[in-house]
Image 1 (cartoon, protein in one colour):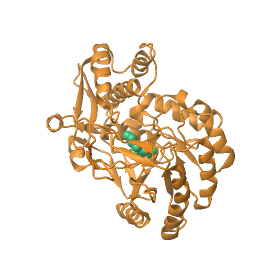
Image 2: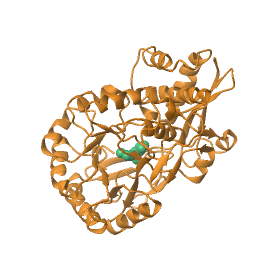
Image 3: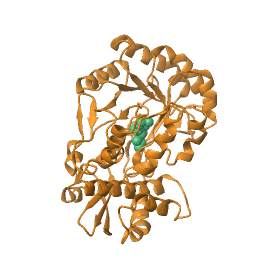
Image 4: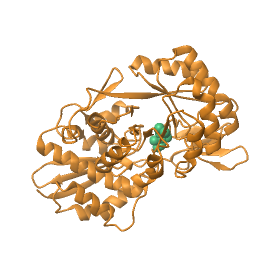
Length: 408
Ligand code: EZ4
Ligand code: CO
């Protein structure tokens, strides 16, 4: 079998998604997600201009060799643009191989290790009462575990939560169009460190000790601050504290680990196993958080998870709205198959997005299942996709009160 065509399809059914569709001479097609939020067209060019010409004529069954060709063969390695492009090829080839076998992808990854995939949802509020309502809403949807984020007194934005709307209004009534330039949010680490324990106290008081709670610090703390926060919030028994520091400084996690037993989850911005080397070898984290879409695909994610399993570290594959249903499907097949599964982030998509990307995976009573369709189980409605063209959009940025740019 040979690859005869590869198309890059950009669509914006509410937000931008980049999809690679590979077609073979035997009529099989495969889909891969290449969405890199805020930098989408860089991946489009990487694929169209540099990768697609190399794919034509290749045997789609040679997934490992194609991966090595795109990773090692480019000479320039790693980075989110490169790895999102490679991921799209890898996932599309797994989709094809599984379709040829007539099996859902998880069957090729060793088969199901569990009946269903547990998830967590996001609860957000401008203040504590609004957050409690949001937790209630997630529980009513079936979620059994919830990530909690709130606004902080004195700050205008609920950090780590982007509204998804293109137009944002600042404190002084200025309207900013995120399609033209990033919305700038505000931040005060001291206020956050004082406020978060009160938030967790209120959530525990309302929902009791059994509800698994997660929290995302979104790379905003130094190791010393994260160590202190971890100690302060230990009584609230978090399922995890996510991205406590900008973890490209892997050694910084040693300080955090020495001071607190709060479970740590890191990796949504990582794109190769080398980003995790110190973290995994020294057991500095408990969960690896990469997205299949940003980590080079199913092939390297499976290797990462096997490596992590040897240190008793579990999976927590990134699953925000900016991972397309194609990327989500790949994650859910892996989740079902691997032994060291932890939890799957799941935000769901809008009804329109689910029409553009019809998928066999289902969310039911807080759990996901990939379904029984051969391959990934996702079909792209190309006509509907074309009716919703690309819209430039930026992620927000973040500044301290004196104007210094801070991690978002
Ligand atoms: O802010 O995917 O845990 N999830 C997150 C996400 C990220 C977005 C950035 O594109 O932190 O919501
Ligand atoms: Co996160």
